[in-house]
Each structure stands twice: as structure tokens, then as C-alpha cells.
Image (cartoon, rainbow, N blue to C red; front, top):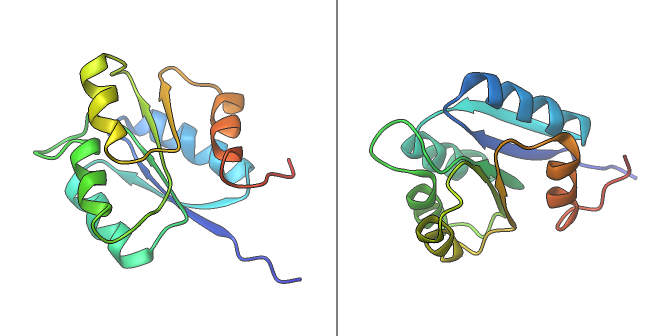
Length: 126
């Protein structure tokens, strides 16, 4: 039974958190494409590799935030997205709803928080 490893894009402008999420997702069996800090880059990579999941911060470096990046990605992909953000105010939550997200997690998060969010879409063995 050939199981294809699932690809995930991590878009987080805090390198330490990026590496932490990368570690969490690898423990869950994902192949990660991390260290993305710009919304524009996330759009380009999503188009190029067609990921199985995107973990997206909302506040990013550059002109495009995570929600705007996902709105662009939605034009060519229905990839599930999990937001991990410090922005839990109603404005950001309402904007994020337009992207049909899988989950909206508020920092700081633990491994089990991410595992629970991922398991909403992907069956997990761990």
C-alpha cells in the first residue's frame, strides 16, 4: 500500500516558530516546505507544489498578509489552511472566514493543538 507523504507549506515570519511548526508537522508525518515569510512567496510556492495543507500566519513580512495570500491561493486551489496567529480580533477572524479555513489557532500553540486541527482533515495514526 503506497502512501504518499503529504506536503505542507508553513508561512510564518518568526523563524523560531517556523521551525517549531515544522517539527510538529514532521512528527505528524508531513513533508514540510517551511521558512516562508512573505505572502507573495506563499502564493508562488502553493502554485508550484500544490500542497496538501498550508499553515499560515496572518501577520507576515511584505505587502500581503496571510489572509490576502490565501484569497489569492483560493483562485487556483482548495487546499486546507490552518491559521496560527496572534490576531484573534473579530476583524481578522471575519476576513479569514472568506478563505474557508480548516482551523484558526491563536498563539502560542502546543503540539496537541496543531495535531487536533490537522486531524479535522487528515486521519492521523500518531
